Image (cartoon, rainbow, N blue to C red):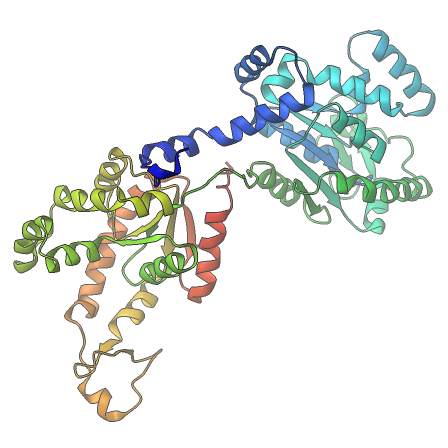
Length: 479
């Protein structure tokens, strides 16, 4: 671009559209696919990739030692995500082809399939329509470093890798009691998970190779291989302890595989802080502005500044201030829109608080193309808010602010002359809290992706949670 015309005016709608539609991630995925497959007709390849629209389908590896429960977790994830489960057994059980016939012969002889043959089976299966549309979950594959490298060479890239872990003694105890339902493939245990139905009990079978000695040998092989596999997936791998109830393991795995990884996309924070009076919104906004250079936009402060500066908006607002009446939303939105459209807000981002306070205001803000990309609700108990606000005092001589509990005045002389703001009486505080909570449910429903934070803790701990919510992608809600 011609630097003489800089800085360039960027409409607020442009970055918002790019973030909402994940344009950067889409282009990054296309570039990766082009470099992997090196097609001759790049345009046709890109069109085909866009038609597939499967960049966000599950692509998951579930790894773990014998008896860690990886098959159970993989099956549950498959059902929950409506995806396809791929195991060595169902890969070789596909319709008769020279490839599957060869794999079956190897498996019948040694219970193993050569790595190159297994990876070719995986490649063929992933080209099926159901895997393209609904994604896939590989159970226990890759087993070796060689398989991991072969899979990568073919451009098969998982989005999430889950590795289950547990002490060997626990795994041996589990394996010895393992039983399988040959009809459904469900796995049970003689001690921990015995089916209540007698019909199911009667048809359960003990799988081969589950003795203590054989399990110990398999564990030794697993430990030897997993340390070589894990470095192949440095940024997408999560280790989860399987030495806990299976349901807990499942929900930890589900939460992880529904989490988006951090993106390299340009990101301009547009942060909205919601919470009752006294929840610490102003302090958190100031901390964000200080650390990240965001523009601190306090709606109430904007109105006061407009009146003090005697702007045209200030002239409209002044009568409402004089008569202690609520400023109409139409005037507030004009001032707010003007501020958020300024170049510093568009380029550096903003943190907004004290607005919106109800559903109507939130909808008006969104209609004016100022949609926040991060929303935080600060929850503080009623007693804590009352304690924070009703004990605030001001020294009329120096203007210094004190708190009778957290920042008491240093001398008795100062304490005797302290004054309380009429707005800080318990009655006024309760009225404001009641008004906020009356509208907060609708606001939370309007921003379903908002992050709720306990605001009744050290302010810097609260800031760390907010900071984490800004720099990391929004998690998908787990049903």
